Length: 182
Image (cartoon, rainbow, N blue to C red; front, side, top):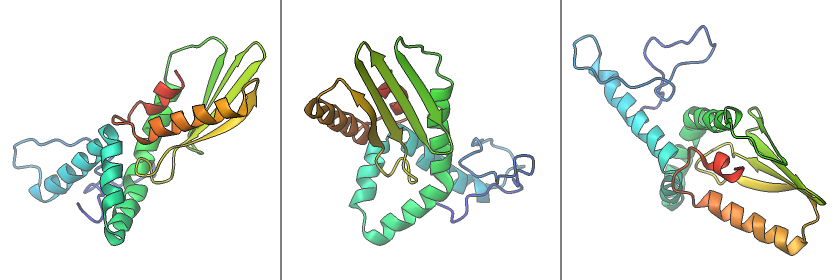
């Protein structure tokens, strides 16, 4: 894995963001115009990104089992290069969802990396705040209760525990929040 996964010649002046191996698609064309010196690091970044995206629970399990030095290095790298991309995709998937639900509103806040789902039926009103951590998907998604009207405290705690457990141990990650609010 490269220390700095910035694409060669990818300043991204039009977006004011550096183009990295995590934001650009990998093209493994067999021709002489591409330099092999950046294809291997790009491939390593693509594999890491895909693994985080598709198997977050397994990567989280591996990351938690590493010694502190390795764990800290992986976390720092992930926070800097991968988490912003994956968090943006996760929030964007909620924004672009065309599903409509009766008695339910879903708001996604990109800057705060959170989704707020509010469900109301008769005298019951439930609000969930699902927030992605800074080191997403290495860290666990937090679920907080907003409003809770008409539901017993014990039932509410049970629901929160089940939802937190599901989000922590999910195997496939790219639609986790959409599944929760649907």
